[in-house]
Image (tube, rainbow, N blue to C red; front, top):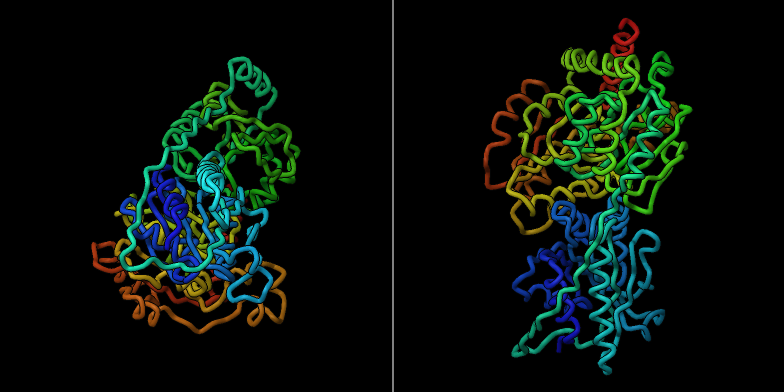
Length: 560
C-alpha cells in the first residue's frame, strides 16, 4: 500500500509549479517513484547513475529556474548526489532532493543499504528536512505537508538552491495490482517576494560617492543571460561611466565591453596604467586568474552589488555591500560622471588591438586545441546554448573573446564532473542545439550522462582529446615535476568511438585542419541522433602553441 502522504507530496509539487522529476531505480524509493511516475502533470526521466542523474536534474532546473525533483533509494545512492548538489548550491540552482531512507530504528543496525542520511549534504544545501516516519496522528500528516511546501518555497526563493527531504519508508513498498492512486488537489503555497530597491536618497548618496573615483571598473561574474541587464550595461558603455569587464561565463558581453582581459591584465607593463581606484562587481565567480590577481594587487576600493546575504570578498578589497537588484544599481551608475578619459582609452586601445590581431595569431599557429577551438566557435549557431567543461576548455573560450550565445559552465565548484550530464539536462528543456565543448578527462569521467533511453538529437559534442589533463603543463608547479605525466596529467589512451557506438551517437574523428573543416560542414544539420567530433592533438604541442601566442600578444602590447 502506498502511503497517502507520499501521494500528497507529489500533489503539492504540482501545485507549486514543479513539472520535472529525475528518478534513479531502487526498491526503498519505490513509493516515491510510483507516485511521481503516475502523476500526469510530472515529466519523469529515469537515470540509473545517481551522480549523472543529479547533474541532469541541475541542467533542467538551470534553464527553467524552477525546482527539479531528484529521487533516489537509501544508502550510498544519496552520496552520489553530492557533487551536483554542491555545484547547484554555489550556482544558486533550485533542486528538491528526496532521498528514501530506512526508518530511524534501523539506522546503525547493519541493515542493508543504510547510512546516516539526516543532514548528509552538510553546509552545501539551503535546508534539510526529516519527513515523518509514521502518520497515525493527523498532525503528522499536516506536518509532512507543511514541510514539503516549505522545502519547495526555500528551493525557489532568492537566492535559489538545493533543498533536501530525507524520507524514512517502511515495507511494504509496492501497491497491489488493483490499488488506485488518489492524487488530491493541494493548495498552492504562494510566496510574494519583494525586490530590494534603492530609494531616492540612497541613489543620490551613491552618485555623490562615485564622484570621488576617476578609474572605475565594473566586473561581471557568472550569471544567466538577462536582456534588461545587457540593456543597462549598454547604457554604461555609452556614457563611459565605468570600464566594463566581462568573462565569457558572465553572459553580459556587449559592444564596448572588455572581453580579452585574460591576455593582458597580468602584464607588468600595463599594471599602473590599468589600475582602478574603484572595483564594482556583481554576479558570481569569474574565470580569469590574471584578472583576480591584478585586482587583488590594486589599491582600489571594492563595492559588491547583490540582493543576496552571501558576499565573498574575491579581491580582498571589499569596502561596501549594496543590497539591491543589479538593474536598479546599474541605472544609477549610468547617471554617474565619465570615468577618466585616458584610463578608459588605455583599456579599449589594448582590447581593440587584441580583437584585431589575435585571430591572426591563432590562424598562424600549428593545428591543435587552440586553433580547432577558434574554428569551431565560428560554426556554432547563435541560438545554440554552449556548455563548456572546466580546465582548458573554459579558458580557451574565455581567451577567444566575445560570444552572443548563452554560456553555461559548472563554475560553482569548477570540477570536471557533470559537464556531460548538465548539457544533457539542458537538451531536455529546448529544441535548440546544445553544444558541449569539453576535454577528454571531463568527457570520459561523466560518460554515464548518455546511459538512458531519451532522445537528445539536438546535442552536439566536441571533445578535445590530448590523452591527458593538459592544463597541468601550463601550471608552473606540476609542469616542472618529473611525475607530471603519470600523476598530474594522468595520461590515458581512450577515444570516444566505442562510447559513441554504445550510445548511438554519430562519431567524427579529426586529426588536422582539413578533416575539421570537413566534419563541420553538416555538423549542425538536423539529425535523429546526437553528433560528436573528437579533435585529437598532443598535449606538449598544445602547451607550446599557447606559449607562442602569449609571446605574440606580449610583443604586440609592448610595441603598441
